[in-house]
Length: 136
Length: 338
Image (cartoon, rainbow over all chains, first blue to last red; front, side):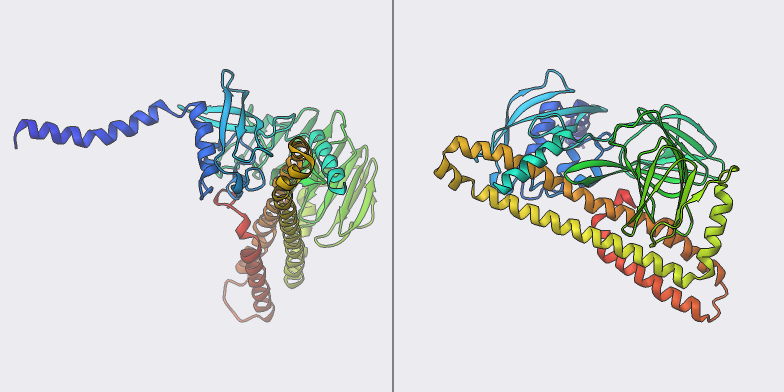
């Protein structure tokens, strides 16, 4: 086999590894985590939504595994997105969750974020923003 | 109007409620481990902070002291203790769940929002400043007050204990007669030994009591599941009617209604599911530390496999217990619980 072919083969084999490790090292930013959370809420299958929360810092973590999220985010209002996101302080990230249903939404929201390794996770969520978090 | 009053009431309660306070380990010795809510276990270390969902287990020589802003918990040897939470009248309430063993509680100050104390046989409301709770091998409990006042409730009957008073609560029964605490205090090991021999003296009656307690938990699971469904339905109806409300009363009025009624109702509905989980976890504890123990003792006592009418009868009842648990409780447990 020619040297150039071997190099090409090596390159093809390493691309997925580099991509995977690269992503892992870059981690998930605060903004990306919140968008991931809303993407999960917007999907038909919401069973992975809990994975956006911190596994040890979020006290309701195990309870969230069984939640359908319907009471907080009705499926009928889907296409949720966040606007006016202010993530300067990761311990108090503020924004507004919007939905096509403009009678119930937008609602002010606060996320308390926690970093684990290279990635950020949601620790608490105040929705609507108030003195007591609905998820903690 | 009724809905608005209800929702405003709920909002006030939600705003007033607190949430779990972290528990710092200030002292630990001997064998002691913690099982985090994520399902993994590790040794207890001084400086650790535990939260709702974590379970602390001490071995024969284990002892752990937790500090929770004005409350000191002394977890004695051979104890299984979990930090839990429950929704109570629109409010999240902390629960100290003692599955087995004994704990001494000492409050520096009382705020009126003290967590409830839950054993397999009773619930204790804290009004006192220093008291101990013991949970026996047969699921019974013993509460002893050093100072202050503690209210103990089981099977619809409540008893108030003052300083140097105690009460025993057998599994599935109301609290017994109050008694004066002997000067030499209670020796948990000998009390528990007595409970264990009672458990084994009549295993048929013991398993029947355990089944009754499980049935009680299952009925609570069903109750909160139904309540959750009822609130979800009401919430869906309110949301569906929002456009009509906007047409009739204007967009601003509809938005106000959404903030004052729908938002608190959605949080309340979300919280109600916590109670389904709470009673499911209480059932798991009953199965693991009371029903499971009895099964192990019975199996060991009948290891020869000789035909024994009592043992056969016991096995039938044990199977009934497991079937109820599987069908009514397991759907509300996650891998990390088990």
